[in-house]
View 1 (cartoon, each protein chain N blue to C red):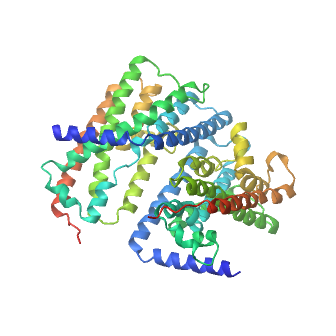
View 2 (view 1 turned 30 degrees about the horizontal axis):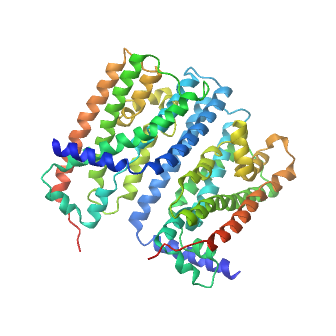
Length: 263
Length: 266
């Protein structure tokens, strides 16, 4: 356990080195958020919906703030497979899945916290219907933070599966890009899942992608009442267990058949 | 004329070289299709829920989306040297070699890269244009077709010009400056939808500073038979020229910037 913890801490420190890039990224992201909330504002003026506009705007801001959590970040492993450097990794006396899981967790957690804090501060100051609304209750806020952490565990498990799938092909860019785009769409980054047709939502909210950000956001904005929250968290938990188990199995399998490139 | 021939020849070569890895090319093209298909699906779902956006009907919205998509990805396909490869050329010192050759720097940059994977994005955009044009029942005439071509061509120049801002920053700072993405990629995201739905600050930004509205939206609205702000027909033909103006200004700035280029090579 100590090895994974120190992997986490090391990666955390590394993330902290790139503060300049973070500022540029945040300004850009805020701008994109502004474009989106103006678009939804205009759409709501044409035809108001049952779902309040504040909830949609909040959805947009929370998605933008935690965008970094979805973004796949660890290209290093795939490079190592391509160059044969993976041989050194296999020599380490630790479990590879756990090693990469811890790295990813640190990267995603710090990466999104650094960006989310300033963005959410700006979003809270914007006028009603454009900015981030206050959480429906203090209890909802607490539960949604819990949901967000579960979502984080879930996205790391998902990304580890993607990596395992691409481990054995040397050119992973195509498959990787496709899986990531699928994730962006089904996680509600391109269009809030709350605006999908209602019949689609029933299925989509059960998929693993909806567990990442959609569930905590819905708890925050009150689309999931507090009474429903335990059920929502349970679905997240079930997916985490399933995805980690699947990832572990795939890694173990592919590791055995891995071809070391060299030269 | 010679330069144009050289450019097309390089493009052919670039495309051919990318096609040498057919499986990889196919997968990446497919990924692009998923990306742009997702964007289009978002528009379809929005139309499904909201029916219309102010005076713009579903057909109009698909037309606007398609026009932006085709223009933007044609630029990324044929102007990859500026839109994608340039920061790397500065960082690696590869730009030095271009100064030694008896051709314009910009020509060489443009000749140095192409991105045929974008073809699937262009296809999605074209599909949206056709769908929009059918649904909006556009009565096509020769001037309208000409206007569409003008809009796309000058739109490409505009987008190239905007990406050149990043290139100029890059010459001075070596690092690529992501902040510029706000007007290039941000412009694409915002101007997939007609400009008049936005509040004044965004409208001013994308009409005056990065005139996507003048180059794409004014002609598109005219073609759709719902002139933007009620402007007359000749304005629709005149406005896209602003894209060319942006390109010329940025071309001059870029040439000045190159004089300050200091190689990173060791």
